[in-house]
Image (cartoon, rainbow, N blue to C red):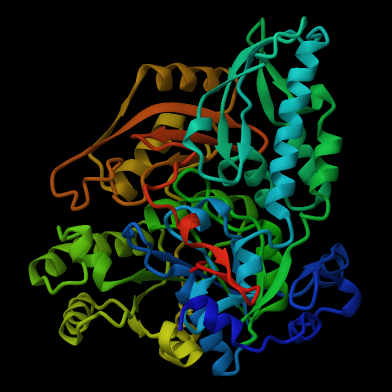
Length: 553
């Protein structure tokens, strides 16, 4: 059966029952039908003094283009913990329509470990991403409206972009205001995908509704004729934008196919954004769960690095254990096997590819000082001898591991890792950030590039040098950095998979997300508005004669 058929044939519990299971009162959740709800501010107030549970972060080695099942493993672990009678809660990101209709597909797990209702979650869900898109584009409209009616603020340069939650390469650079109306001022603009927008970042990092409005007000939309920043609050946009986000700001409650509670909220990508679900969702999960399983996008070089250096820094927390998801096919892919041949037996590629996995283990264990376990996500195409080879390699280095078979067996296939995690989270940790707040912008970039990516240095293009100088003049050097980089390689070149030769990271530009409170560093060829592949997933999605959706995977 396909993922969608498995999900459709599983009987879900009423969402009120799921709420009760995790200690929420009936008046603390707002139902969106039978199987979805939002958690209200009342719950945050009542539970704020509760002791936090143990936080387990799920990350991965560098993936192949189709992903390695990080969400699948996260759900399996939570279900596995429930199987051994532990109070486990999931805290995950919301899927973006970009991958759903693009190349990667949905993001609700797979096989017997999914969150549900999967069609709803992968499509419009509770409308959060639409609200974020609307708030973002309201600000764009108010900027151009202000310029149209005389430009009292003297806006000279607009840096704010519009957004859309779809892959559309034609929108990367656009000309606006071409109607020819008398006072309309044409200008160059562009679109980011919604999940890379600053509103998404703010939405995920704000602690409460007042903090949300303050951060929105702090957005720099551009610069005036004197080169001074112009803020969203200068346009009086922050109030209306917050109103648009009011309902969306409450975290979403759903369930796994085994009825494990799942809080799913916010969805920034990790290659072009900070890659973590909302602070609000994580905080709520920690108050109601003894074990909270959360994920950060792509590999430890992207989502986990940003989770630890940005989100943990802002929340004042750190994970009690980190799970690094690996697959046989990803190991072979990073050992030189061609993408189309990663399912074929290839001992040499398997051996060489272990270097990538070991680098990710070292990142979390040696650089960040965290407790680590490797989850080998089992595929039915894996050969037993390949699995044994990887296990032996891990054992030789005394690295904790577990073979996870959640896709085929559900929570039963993750009992081993669940049992191991209950012990690992009790181990002492020596968590540390990769850089200090007081480090210069370049020092922060270089520490991440050399310590986490394994680069031998950083090269800066002229635009990056100029903007770093501007940010230093604005007094923004103390902000954390969010590096936009390819997910497929430790380097900034998606073709350099093995990273055998010394490499440098090229920084082509640097931008300020003042409201979100971090600096974005653009490296290599990474773009903040993806394009569709030659054969997009959208071509295979339809409604059948029974009225059921087909083709989402």
